[in-house]
Image (cartoon, rainbow, N blue to C red; front, side):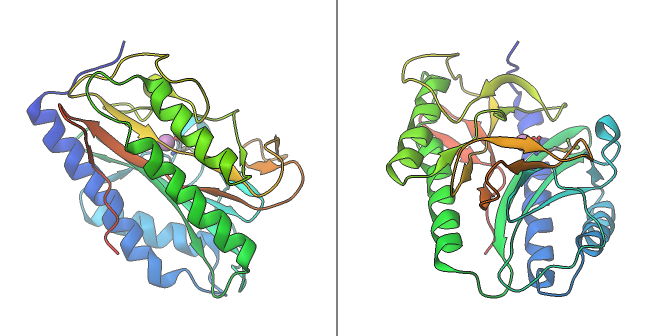
Amino acid sequence: MITIKSEKEIELMRHAGYLVSLTHQYLKPFIKPGITTKELDELAEEFIRAHDGVPTCKGYEGFPASLCTSINDEVVHGIPSNRKLKNGDIITIDMVIGYHGYQGDAAWTYAVGTVNEQKKYLMEHTEKSLYEGIKMVKSGAHIGDISHAIEEYATNHHLGVVKELVGHGIGTEMHESPDVPNYGHPGTGPRLKEGMIICIEPMLNLGSRYVGILDDNWTIVTEDGKPSAHYEHTVLVTKDGYEILTPRLD
Ligand code: MF3
Ligand code: CO
Protein backbone atom coordinates (compact mmCIF):
# COMPACT_ATOMS: atom_id res chain seq x y z
CA MET A 1 0.00 0.00 0.00
CA ILE A 2 1.25 3.46 -0.87
CA THR A 3 0.38 5.86 1.91
CA ILE A 4 -1.02 9.34 1.31
CA LYS A 5 0.16 11.79 3.94
CA SER A 6 -2.11 14.28 5.67
CA GLU A 7 -1.17 17.96 5.89
CA LYS A 8 -0.02 17.39 9.48
CA GLU A 9 2.16 14.44 8.48
CA ILE A 10 3.62 16.43 5.59
CA GLU A 11 4.61 19.14 8.06
CA LEU A 12 6.56 16.56 10.13
CA MET A 13 8.12 15.04 6.97
CA ARG A 14 9.18 18.54 5.93
CA HIS A 15 10.84 19.00 9.29
CA ALA A 16 12.59 15.58 9.11
CA GLY A 17 13.79 16.37 5.58
CA TYR A 18 15.04 19.79 6.57
CA LEU A 19 17.01 18.24 9.42
CA VAL A 20 18.66 15.91 6.90
CA SER A 21 19.61 18.93 4.76
CA LEU A 22 20.89 20.79 7.80
CA THR A 23 23.05 17.84 8.87
CA HIS A 24 24.57 17.52 5.39
CA GLN A 25 25.33 21.24 5.44
CA TYR A 26 26.86 20.93 8.92
CA LEU A 27 29.14 18.06 7.84
CA LYS A 28 30.31 19.64 4.60
CA PRO A 29 33.24 21.70 5.97
CA PHE A 30 34.56 18.63 7.81
CA ILE A 31 34.80 16.55 4.61
CA LYS A 32 38.55 17.11 4.13
CA PRO A 33 41.64 14.91 3.77
CA GLY A 34 42.63 13.36 7.13
CA ILE A 35 39.23 13.04 8.80
CA THR A 36 37.97 9.51 9.41
CA THR A 37 34.50 8.38 8.44
CA LYS A 38 33.91 7.44 12.09
CA GLU A 39 34.63 11.05 13.11
CA LEU A 40 32.08 12.25 10.55
CA ASP A 41 29.60 9.76 11.94
CA GLU A 42 30.11 10.98 15.51
CA LEU A 43 29.72 14.62 14.47
CA ALA A 44 26.51 13.74 12.65
CA GLU A 45 24.99 11.75 15.49
CA GLU A 46 25.63 14.52 18.00
CA PHE A 47 24.17 17.16 15.65
CA ILE A 48 21.09 15.08 14.84
CA ARG A 49 20.29 14.34 18.49
CA ALA A 50 20.86 17.98 19.47
CA HIS A 51 18.12 18.86 16.97
CA ASP A 52 15.60 16.42 18.42
CA GLY A 53 16.22 13.91 15.62
CA VAL A 54 16.92 10.18 15.65
CA PRO A 55 19.61 8.64 13.40
CA THR A 56 17.38 5.92 11.95
CA CYS A 57 20.15 3.86 10.33
CA LYS A 58 21.81 3.20 13.68
CA GLY A 59 20.63 -0.25 14.70
CA TYR A 60 18.57 -0.74 11.54
CA GLU A 61 18.95 -4.45 10.74
CA GLY A 62 22.12 -4.27 12.81
CA PHE A 63 23.75 -1.38 10.91
CA PRO A 64 26.20 0.10 13.44
CA ALA A 65 26.25 3.81 12.56
CA SER A 66 24.21 6.95 11.88
CA LEU A 67 25.65 7.58 8.42
CA CYS A 68 26.40 5.40 5.44
CA THR A 69 29.82 6.56 4.18
CA SER A 70 30.77 5.11 0.80
CA ILE A 71 34.16 6.00 -0.70
CA ASN A 72 35.18 5.78 -4.41
CA ASP A 73 34.18 2.30 -5.66
CA GLU A 74 31.80 1.84 -2.72
CA VAL A 75 28.28 2.39 -4.03
CA VAL A 76 26.15 2.46 -0.86
CA HIS A 77 25.97 1.29 2.77
CA GLY A 78 29.65 1.84 3.60
CA ILE A 79 30.26 1.56 7.35
CA PRO A 80 32.04 4.44 9.11
CA SER A 81 35.49 3.33 10.30
CA ASN A 82 38.99 4.56 11.09
CA ARG A 83 39.68 4.98 7.36
CA LYS A 84 40.94 8.49 6.66
CA LEU A 85 39.69 10.46 3.69
CA LYS A 86 42.39 11.25 1.12
CA ASN A 87 42.75 14.07 -1.36
CA GLY A 88 41.05 12.95 -4.59
CA ASP A 89 38.52 10.62 -2.95
CA ILE A 90 34.80 10.97 -3.47
CA ILE A 91 32.52 10.08 -0.58
CA THR A 92 28.79 9.55 -0.53
CA ILE A 93 27.10 10.42 2.72
CA ASP A 94 23.65 8.91 3.02
CA MET A 95 21.50 9.50 6.07
CA VAL A 96 18.02 8.90 7.35
CA ILE A 97 16.68 10.99 10.22
CA GLY A 98 13.51 10.44 12.20
CA TYR A 99 11.66 13.42 13.63
CA HIS A 100 8.63 12.75 15.85
CA GLY A 101 8.27 9.40 14.09
CA TYR A 102 8.60 10.65 10.48
CA GLN A 103 11.62 10.00 8.27
CA GLY A 104 13.75 12.08 5.90
CA ASP A 105 16.42 10.53 3.65
CA ALA A 106 19.04 12.12 1.40
CA ALA A 107 22.43 11.16 0.00
CA TRP A 108 24.98 13.34 -1.75
CA THR A 109 28.43 12.58 -3.07
CA TYR A 110 31.18 14.98 -2.04
CA ALA A 111 34.65 15.62 -3.46
CA VAL A 112 37.52 15.37 -0.95
CA GLY A 113 40.04 18.07 -1.84
CA THR A 114 40.65 18.06 -5.59
CA VAL A 115 39.24 15.19 -7.64
CA ASN A 116 40.03 14.16 -11.21
CA GLU A 117 37.91 15.04 -14.26
CA GLN A 118 36.36 11.58 -14.46
CA LYS A 119 35.08 11.76 -10.90
CA LYS A 120 33.80 15.30 -11.52
CA TYR A 121 31.95 14.04 -14.60
CA LEU A 122 30.46 11.15 -12.64
CA MET A 123 29.27 13.42 -9.82
CA GLU A 124 27.85 16.10 -12.10
CA HIS A 125 25.86 13.71 -14.23
CA THR A 126 24.65 11.51 -11.39
CA GLU A 127 23.23 14.59 -9.68
CA LYS A 128 21.68 15.78 -12.95
CA SER A 129 20.10 12.37 -13.50
CA LEU A 130 18.38 12.75 -10.12
CA TYR A 131 16.85 16.06 -11.21
CA GLU A 132 15.78 14.52 -14.54
CA GLY A 133 13.87 11.94 -12.49
CA ILE A 134 12.42 14.51 -10.08
CA LYS A 135 11.14 16.63 -13.00
CA MET A 136 8.76 13.80 -13.94
CA VAL A 137 7.03 13.87 -10.53
CA LYS A 138 3.42 15.07 -10.44
CA SER A 139 0.03 13.70 -9.59
CA GLY A 140 -1.02 11.23 -12.32
CA ALA A 141 2.50 10.40 -13.53
CA HIS A 142 3.83 6.84 -13.27
CA ILE A 143 6.85 5.61 -11.33
CA GLY A 144 8.15 4.31 -14.68
CA ASP A 145 8.31 7.89 -16.00
CA ILE A 146 10.85 8.73 -13.28
CA SER A 147 12.77 5.47 -13.79
CA HIS A 148 12.99 5.95 -17.53
CA ALA A 149 14.13 9.58 -17.31
CA ILE A 150 17.01 8.60 -15.02
CA GLU A 151 18.04 5.60 -17.10
CA GLU A 152 17.93 7.53 -20.35
CA TYR A 153 20.02 10.39 -18.95
CA ALA A 154 22.56 7.98 -17.44
CA THR A 155 22.83 5.89 -20.58
CA ASN A 156 23.25 8.99 -22.77
CA HIS A 157 26.18 9.91 -20.53
CA HIS A 158 27.69 6.41 -20.69
CA LEU A 159 27.27 5.75 -16.98
CA GLY A 160 26.37 2.34 -15.54
CA VAL A 161 22.98 2.20 -13.79
CA VAL A 162 22.99 0.07 -10.63
CA LYS A 163 19.82 -2.04 -10.71
CA GLU A 164 20.16 -4.09 -7.54
CA LEU A 165 19.16 -1.14 -5.35
CA VAL A 166 16.19 1.16 -5.84
CA GLY A 167 14.48 4.23 -4.43
CA HIS A 168 11.44 3.83 -2.21
CA GLY A 169 8.42 5.34 -0.55
CA ILE A 170 9.02 6.86 2.88
CA GLY A 171 6.94 7.94 5.87
CA THR A 172 6.95 6.57 9.39
CA GLU A 173 9.18 3.82 7.94
CA MET A 174 12.32 4.60 5.98
CA HIS A 175 11.39 2.05 3.33
CA GLU A 176 7.76 2.00 2.23
CA SER A 177 6.00 1.17 -1.05
CA PRO A 178 6.50 1.78 -3.89
CA ASP A 179 9.92 0.78 -5.23
CA VAL A 180 11.43 3.50 -7.40
CA PRO A 181 13.89 1.81 -9.79
CA ASN A 182 16.45 3.79 -11.77
CA TYR A 183 15.51 2.00 -15.00
CA GLY A 184 12.21 1.24 -16.69
CA HIS A 185 9.57 2.31 -19.16
CA PRO A 186 7.33 5.39 -19.27
CA GLY A 187 3.68 4.81 -18.39
CA THR A 188 4.42 1.71 -16.29
CA GLY A 189 4.31 1.07 -12.56
CA PRO A 190 2.15 2.67 -9.88
CA ARG A 191 0.59 6.07 -10.47
CA LEU A 192 1.63 8.99 -8.28
CA LYS A 193 -0.96 10.85 -6.26
CA GLU A 194 -0.84 14.12 -4.37
CA GLY A 195 0.42 13.48 -0.82
CA MET A 196 2.67 10.51 -1.65
CA ILE A 197 6.30 10.87 -0.58
CA ILE A 198 9.11 9.01 -2.35
CA CYS A 199 12.88 8.84 -2.30
CA ILE A 200 14.51 9.02 -5.72
CA GLU A 201 18.12 7.88 -5.65
CA PRO A 202 20.18 7.09 -8.75
CA MET A 203 23.40 5.19 -8.10
CA LEU A 204 25.59 5.51 -11.21
CA ASN A 205 28.97 3.95 -11.99
CA LEU A 206 31.80 5.26 -14.12
CA GLY A 207 32.28 1.75 -15.48
CA SER A 208 30.19 -1.40 -15.42
CA ARG A 209 26.78 -1.38 -13.73
CA TYR A 210 27.56 -4.59 -11.86
CA VAL A 211 28.13 -4.62 -8.10
CA GLY A 212 29.19 -6.96 -5.32
CA ILE A 213 29.12 -6.92 -1.53
CA LEU A 214 32.08 -6.85 0.88
CA ASP A 215 32.65 -9.36 3.69
CA ASP A 216 31.10 -6.91 6.18
CA ASN A 217 27.78 -7.86 4.50
CA TRP A 218 26.84 -4.20 4.09
CA THR A 219 29.17 -2.35 1.74
CA ILE A 220 28.10 -2.56 -1.90
CA VAL A 221 31.04 -2.01 -4.29
CA THR A 222 31.43 -1.81 -8.05
CA GLU A 223 32.58 -5.05 -9.60
CA ASP A 224 35.27 -3.37 -11.71
CA GLY A 225 36.59 -1.12 -8.91
CA LYS A 226 35.68 2.08 -10.76
CA PRO A 227 34.03 4.91 -8.82
CA SER A 228 30.31 5.25 -8.14
CA ALA A 229 28.16 8.24 -7.15
CA HIS A 230 24.77 8.47 -5.45
CA TYR A 231 22.36 11.37 -5.03
CA GLU A 232 19.03 11.09 -3.25
CA HIS A 233 16.18 13.40 -2.33
CA THR A 234 12.95 12.86 -0.43
CA VAL A 235 10.21 14.25 -2.68
CA LEU A 236 6.54 15.09 -2.02
CA VAL A 237 4.08 14.63 -4.89
CA THR A 238 1.90 17.71 -5.35
CA LYS A 239 -1.02 18.40 -7.68
CA ASP A 240 1.10 20.05 -10.37
CA GLY A 241 4.53 18.75 -9.54
CA TYR A 242 6.69 18.17 -6.52
CA GLU A 243 8.33 19.62 -3.47
CA ILE A 244 11.84 18.52 -2.49
CA LEU A 245 11.75 17.93 1.27
CA THR A 246 15.54 17.65 1.55
CA PRO A 247 16.65 20.86 -0.21
CA ARG A 248 20.36 21.49 -0.65
CA LEU A 249 21.34 24.41 1.52
CA ASP A 250 24.54 25.28 -0.36
N1 MF3 B 1 19.23 5.66 2.47
C1 MF3 B 1 19.64 4.30 2.69
C2 MF3 B 1 18.67 3.38 1.98
O1 MF3 B 1 17.64 3.82 1.56
C3 MF3 B 1 19.72 4.09 4.14
C4 MF3 B 1 20.23 2.80 4.57
S1 MF3 B 1 20.43 2.85 6.27
C5 MF3 B 1 21.07 1.32 6.62
O2 MF3 B 1 18.95 2.21 1.79
F1 MF3 B 1 20.93 1.18 7.87
F2 MF3 B 1 20.38 0.38 5.98
F3 MF3 B 1 22.29 1.29 6.24
CO1 CO C 1 16.93 5.92 0.59
